Every structure is written in C-alpha cells, then in structure tokens.
Image (tube, rainbow, N blue to C red; front, side):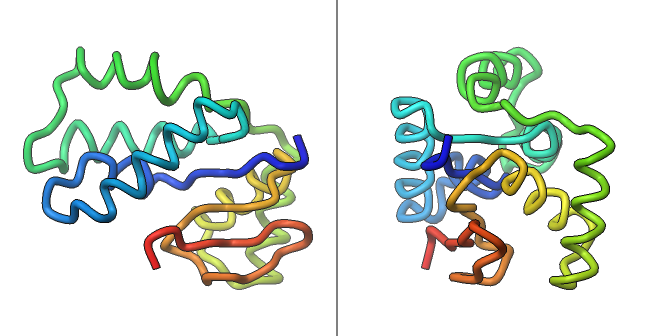
Length: 140
C-alpha cells in the first residue's frame, strides 16, 4: 500500500465540471488511474461530500439513480477507509499540529492512516509534507 494515493472530494466534483475542461480532464485522468492501478483511496467523508454536491449543488444535479450508479462503479471501489476512534484522535493531532480545519484534518488523517504517499487536493497547502504524506494540488 506504500504507493497508494488519496483523492479529495474536489477531484470527483471537477470530473463533472463542464466549465473548466482542463480541471475536468485532470480529475477524470486521476480517477481512471485510481481505478486501473487500484492504488487510489478515498474515505467515507469523500463519498458523503461528493453525493451532497452532486445531488444538490451541480448546475444539473445528478438523479438519485445516477448518483447510486456513480457510487457503485466509481466511489465504492476506492473506499477503503472507514472511521475508528484512533482515526478521530489522529485527526485531532493533525488539527493541533498543522492548524487545518476539522474536516480537512479528517481528510489528512484518513490519508495518513491509509498509508498513502500523496494526497491530491486543491484545498490544502500544495507540496506540504505531513509525516510520509505529500499534499499535491493536481490543478496547479
């Protein structure tokens, strides 16, 4: 699992973005790589956040049926991280040490506990290293 990488919610949201085709292409390529290499990882939080945005905030929201298909075919194969009490303690440590908001601390902690070497997110500090995890903004 050492070469695993973690995808934040924005990667999945941008894969549907019809206005920024460059971001859409980058996001779709990351998702394809994640599925084909079986090295991409997401957490329950990414699923929750994506479904919320897709069902309510997209210009053309996904139907419940289409969201269900996306969940089954794209998100579920990548969802290998689910919470434990240790996870929340780890997130508290990330929050205290790196001063991220709570939800970003949860993402970082999930990536760390999943033994990922890269966390793809545009919301966090590009090129920051936390333990053995490097944060990369794939859209830079």
